[in-house]
Image (cartoon, rainbow, N blue to C red; front, side, top):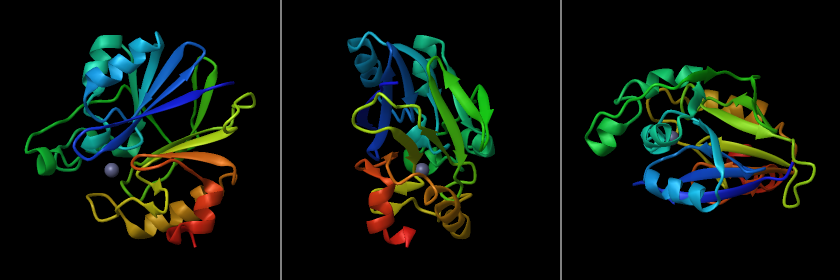
Length: 215
Ligand SMILES: [Zn+2]
């Protein structure tokens, strides 16, 4: 499988929106905001969107989803324990940051260990709580023909290059984050490319060497 990952940085807190293109298809990960820019990018490639995936329920990862659902009629996948965030504007922080109540419903709620298949691309759902109680990461090692990397993880606000997500927001928990980092993130293969919810891409190997939170 060859995939191409395009990153758009959108919305009021510069969230990474990932468009994963393969075989004429496209997956949309964390559509933060500015749906028209996401749509432009998909249309430019003449790709067929298959699904929307949320790494977690914070407002800055989900707000363009309704417009994309309306345009393409595709399903939203989210972690089951973050359903409460999607449905509650205090928990998803839209009330605090935007002064308005933004809520939505996903179509499919998934949990750690689930395997998702979108045409030829398979993702394993990793349960990675700590930033929020229902944070998940999407992992694939289905990329033998890919040149830049063979394995990839979309980690949302769990792991960043050189840092990790905040644990002081509603449903966040420091001990849980530590457990996620030790028991899930550090156990990923070192050559896994990491695509975080904010900032630059990295690899598991680089983070194990340089990220103070993974010591
Ligand atoms: Zn977040």
